[in-house]
Length: 366
Ligand code: ADP
Ligand code: MG
Image (cartoon, rainbow, N blue to C red):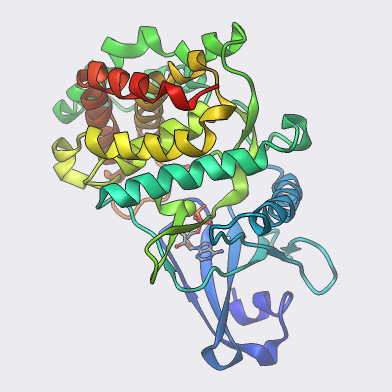
């Protein structure tokens, strides 16, 4: 694919200086477009239509969210930036190539950096605060203002079912791989608790709100100079759901110092509770009043389940032949899964401390 001609559906060819692959996202294909002699940039992305079956809905959600979030940001005393959808020349929010690939352009948040794990308590606090602010802003809109772009997303029992199915048809060599014993043992020990959040939702304890859907720590951008969180990106999965999915996903990704790609060193993964206490402090300080004290009581379950669920998703994909997550070496999804299961066990082992940290912060809740 000639990238300049793709980008020229959004910006005049004469303004394009260069285009290069960018970032390390593992869902979409991301390119950095350098414009006007190197002074400005924008992001060009090929949306993964294997994951997002209705990409038009994704773009409508994104446009609705970013316009609203931009208005909210303007009322903030804190510097906060919101990526905007940059439409194609014909006014559409995307461009579909003759080969059916689906492209979009979004504004680039300049002078920022992101991290695959958190390196200071200040950063942990900032990440929590940023997610809290996002929830508080986006939930000024009603939950039904957004289309569901991924059915069953983060509904943990569904991932267990998919795993069981993949396991039954997995190659014998996978089942006899001794390295997987840890993962299979972890699944056997915890599978009975897979529906903790869904049950609380069914009982009306956890209400459906609008969520980001993928607030991994590397989707939060920090200003290079102030070192403060200034933006939250990767807005494909904004949809109705439980804010607990987001809190859990953010904490499990940020509070594992070895990150998601530990590879053969997966045994090094652990949950840094100290870092978590700063993250949850930032979150509840900003968004705690959205939550009842009973909701707050489910934060531990969310953190455990998001790690456990992601382990299931990676392992399912490994058994299915790596069709969902991009890989750079054949066993990458196996090691990603082991890393998450190791993390889930670490969260479980420290559950008393995690519960007491959350309990101490309940005064932020309504
Ligand atoms: P994926 O869904 O594949 O994770 P992302 O939307 O997170 O894709 O983009 C991949 C990477 O590109 C990000 O981790 C970030 O480094 C960079 N990026 C994406 N959008 C922006 C933006 N608007 N401003 C700055 N950097 C961005
Ligand atoms: Mg991303």
